[in-house]
Image (cartoon, rainbow, N blue to C red; front, side):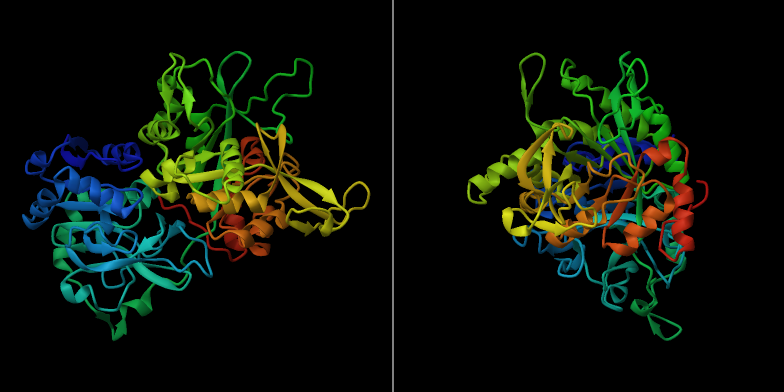
Length: 554
């Protein structure tokens, strides 16, 4: 089996990249010292997270001169995500830290005044001058997750000999990929972009992309039109996420379950844990139906299990071998003590999940406790919370906060200090207002904190996304909690995933058309076989909403 070399440093989920490379028929050989770079024929620099963290890690380990030498030698080189950003001179994310300088220029931050940042989801990589650049197709979508980008300027990079694929988000057109000679770099994650991404990886690995590029040099204009005028306008798709609640049943087997307002036990005699299927098999099924992401929520504590042997680690390893879209894992990501008394930080647990195949981690109850401390200290950040630790190392896009609020009715807004909404669902005494109280411990304990306070606090700590559940809507199949979603979207600038209440495809259409949510999540309706992910996406497409379509077989 032919080999490709992968640089080993703290880069988030490299397990998925390894699996994708192996899916393409290649074997990974790790580069763990600068000296080994010289022996690499094809080299990939993966990256997730902070520009400064990535480049400082590379510089401290002595990799920078070796990487520059590899690129200058003409050997194949690929950078992914921060690996793309690294080839520029600098980034506004860390102005004091120098990039590799392969391309002159500075990356800047997305404008978040009118849209959510980070830019998370499926978008174009459009190169009108070369529509088949490294297997990229104009009608395909690729998975992006980033806050900083290089703004596309017509003809600028082309005049330096670079072929450029672009995407547009909220009116900002940016570089999605660049290629020149032996170099390919993608802002998107090919290993998380389904079949479309696997095609890009294969074109790099087998050399066909570079060969085709040599036969089609970059152009600054096409038929008289500037390339920036030809960028696909549809942009970011509506994300449809499949969520699997995983826990041990009474026999000790891991199963996918689903609760009714968080109660996962059957109402029949025996009161057994509701068993809807096996996690790995169901995740693969949803991927093949077109799910844009898959989320595992671990609702079993596994307190008596050594951390290194957590059952969810094995589920992630097996799932990431066949599922090439983003995987999120939630549950148990906190500072803890192992069964042998060893103290283990939340960052160490998150790192184990990332190494096993997760792309994001979801933090729940601990985020509420951290937010309470944040406010009690006068909104001071000390850097010691799980959110801060993980986002500093892997970037805020790697941290999701799962919020479990429920309605508390009040007769008037002035009777509570909390942020209220005028509800369409009056209370038992006809109350027209409510506030959404945050809960912990699977909804069993209510705290004196509203959802606006919590989401604004975790955004300040470095969370990159909110998974917004609703205890009132959970298991009802009556549609998403639109008033709750609208309140949270107005309160924060990071992306929000709508969760709880989906019962049919029309509920997804409703939440996308009536709120500005960034994604919507389904669970029970998929698990019970009432609707497939593909049926939801086909329905949305028929209604004129932009969704990622099936991209064929690899």
